[in-house]
Image (cartoon, rainbow, N blue to C red; front, side, top):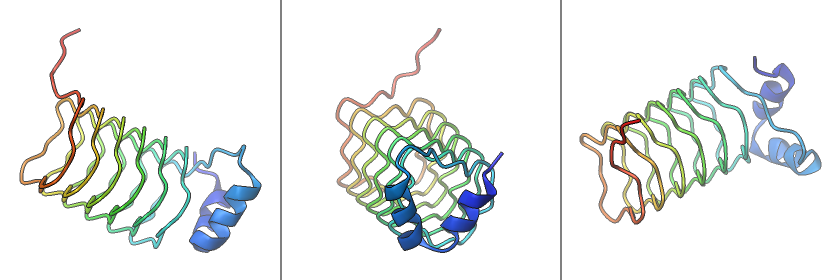
Length: 156
């Protein structure tokens, strides 16, 4: 269950949110399952935030820091994640339909079963990323870096 205080603070904008994060580095924000449709989160520090099942449709997360965030099964349809840091982020079964990930860093991220249909990953860093069973149909991949990525389906 999301922490209402975290949600209300985030809605004030990235500047007060980031200041609070710097003062409370030990807190792992709980924003699980909330509606952040069209939210302006540009440059927000969402490191290690719990955003599972969150609706971020058409949100602006340009240059946001989502390092080690939990976005499993999140809705990121048409979300702007350009130049965002998604290092070690869990995007298991996340919907990134039409998302803008140009220049984003997704190193060591988990994109297992993620839907990246028509997403824009031009210039994105996907080194050491796991995207087993991910949907890349219609995705723009020019200049994306895929070295050491795990794309092979493994049977248990």
